[in-house]
Amino acid sequence: MKFSPCGGFLCTAGQDMNVVVWCVGALPVDAQSSTEDDGNAKRTSPPTTAAGANEETNRRSFNRNDNKKYPFVDAVELKSFINPTPYRVLEGHTGDVIDIAWSKSKFILSASTDKTVCLWHVSRTECLQFFRHPDIVTAVEFHPAHDRYYISGCFDRKLRVW
Image (cartoon, rainbow, N blue to C red; front, side, top):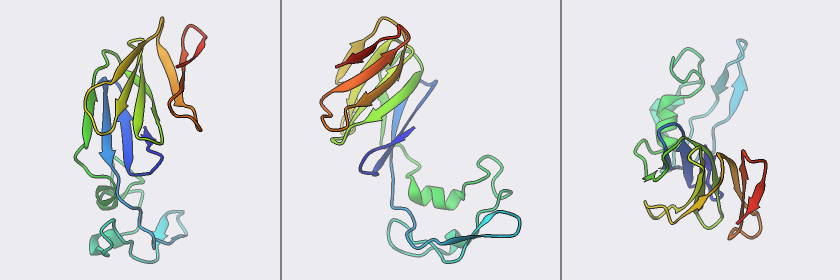
């Protein structure tokens, strides 16, 4: 999973062969924490949500026993931070997606066990371009200064610049 450079989106991917784009809200800016005797973080002030209002339900302290599925995540705060409904579900791979990269201009690369890299844009649901490889693609990354270029790593032990 990767956050976009602007912080407004989060991409997740995996065995379902899809790349999912989520909208991300602002982090609570006034949330201060201290450590209790048992090592759990405790908020000392209520957080402000993306909308800018304090919520009584977000005043809970993090507690390892609060949520069995995500033991270190406050479920109410997670909902206010990441929209629970995906912004986009990008379908196009026929194998597991094992790496994702974001450009500064909101393009997304996804590397897959189907021996391809897909180029996406956050505003569209279809793959803009497939880049075929001779073996499984294990890594992708945009060039940090010139995001019209990217590099891919493949099981054939070669790096490719596109």
